[in-house]
Image (cartoon, rainbow, N blue to C red; front, side, top):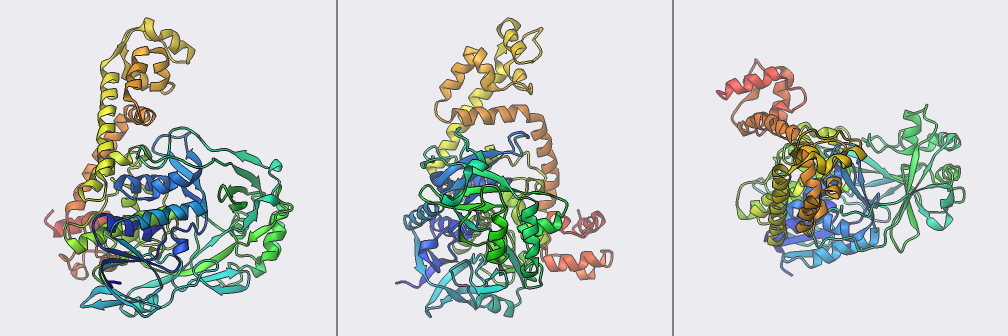
Length: 624
């Protein structure tokens, strides 16, 4: 076995897998080290991918040439497009996956990727020389050399699980924690802290009374995660089920709060605001009489159900007593209880936008070690870290994404500029330019970027060019074709849209809120013929064309705003200003600019506590 690699990736979770595949597919000899080869890509919590803003990240990962979208499509047992009642900037894809098949697909993908090797072991130490990482040492005493190392350890660094007052050391239930790396990195100056997350119990489906619950079926239209035509859903589609807690449930939980690690002082670390435990919910929202819960299937061949909305670290007996008060779960049998877990993370302001650490060259951090939560946020970081680790090995400009280019860009900029005071989760509200970052156009935004760095395949690039051509043909037809009142007025009246007095372009009708391209095609054979000529992917192309037409003015205005602010992103200041010597800056500004050491004035302007007057002073210092 050769112990020299271009890149070593530590951890085979969602960040590590994307990092390893990206680096290997770009041509780097890559080693992925994992504690357990049977848990590669394990969905530690929810058996689902996507959701509000998270779905957009997965589409971006796919558009750049990553793997999460393809694997999710292959293992999906339910798909839904969330926020359909809102504008297209808010539409977010979400999919339930078969947990075991998700792992199997990841194993199949990794073991068939050229240049990618796997070792089942635990990294206990990194090796450095002259301020740069040079490799790793494992629990088996093996020393391996690498030009770059990507740390994606998830919740395993000093992991501690809480089941009521019972504490177990581990990075995930029935899996050991990892020790040594945090202590070593702190010894060379890295800032570390603790975070907390949790997961609900898993319930035996044979003990659930689904007749007392509301069924939530999935959707069966053309939407999916990957833009590749050959990426399709292959499994039987399954339903989720909805029920609610009640006052009796809350009373049972209150009885056990004294034994809750969250409320008796046992857990001191930072927990998630946006995915709180059930005990936190009933304390924070004491006036709320019930909370909605979702029973989500874990797979087509499994009786295991995930109780979404009921994360808990209460003792097993308290969890059971509370669950048995919920309609449909009166006789529920638990496969395993919910639990909380504490783990180490590193302040992400210690990173560059490439996710390389500022303190140690060629060392990259991605995923929960950066203070984030969620498979999607981890996957997006892993992809960028893997790309830049490859670039560090073989030369080239670092690869980063702007806030106006991708949700991944927003995510990373938030992390390295603002840091985290709680587990970071992506929302559409975090993006200033969300109309530019829609889920339907991620391939238009990013596939050519992925192709230019050697990650996106020729096949994917060619599919994009065909889509662009077909979309342009349809757009030109709509903008150039006229329709007369006699041809359309009866249809307009039937659909509560005002009748035409004069002829107009088809595109003008598409702009009406009550109408759409496919609706108009029902009344206009020429339009239907043009749509049929598109052939494959016609639904996707029609939808994308309609969004661009309806929101063209808003999109152009947002682009102009982004372009104006983008000018500040091109004024590089790192290493060029001694902030402590500028007395005209506020004390807070001097302290924070010294700590973050921003790359550009644009990044400096987003640091909390940096005022517009501080930015103007920096512009003056740089001679505008």
